[in-house]
Image (cartoon, rainbow, N blue to C red; front, side, top):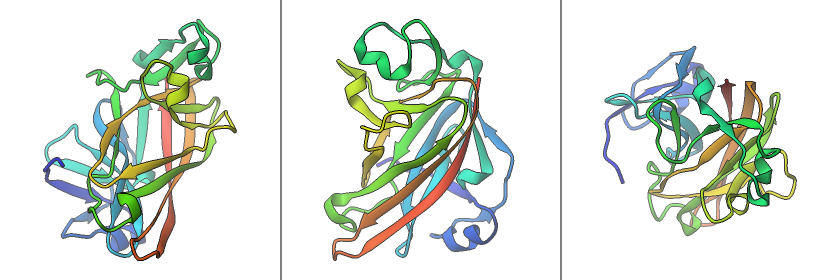
Amino acid sequence: MRAFTRSLTLAGTVAATLAVGGLTAAHAAGTTLSTGHVDVLDVEYDGTGLALHVHDESVTPGVEYAPADVVLRALPAAAYTVPTGTCYSHLGTAGSTVYRLPQTQNADLLWPGISGEHLTAGVFRSDTVQVKLVSLSGPGKLTVYKNGLCPRNNRSYDSGDATVANTRDIAAGEHDHANWVFTKAGSYTATFAVSGTLTNGTPVGPTSATYTFQVG
């Protein structure tokens, strides 16, 4: 698990609820993040409830935001040509242009991470919680997938395919990256929800958070 110093930026009553562990709460609405390492799905548990945050690691010390307080930007340089083959058909028609925030870091783009580093082992069953894509609104679809022999088979989320569960396990201590692809330019609103089951069988959550992505 990485060690880092962080400050927490949360709004209103949410801040009062989630400013745990001596973190300072402050409001920073209107922040746009467009480059650098940012954990988009950053899960925390304060002993009572689960929460999703956006953790900006492109600055030192790192800063945490409530998802509602930031806009996550996929710059025009994220434009990506869909390859040929059925293994990329989830991205659209071969040769068409989509916008991809890549699994491998590109210093000129946002590098979206997925983090369970703030979860403590032994708290949740199987040391995992579940993060679900509840809804997406926007001009196109969102698909999140890992590189591999056939990327279509490595999807965690796909708002345009009802056969995908759209739920991902996040393990205590985990830090991961994937490709985040938006099929059209424009503004998107995505709602994710996190839930889990304590080792004693008590369910926790779901707690939802809404994210804004500006693409292109």
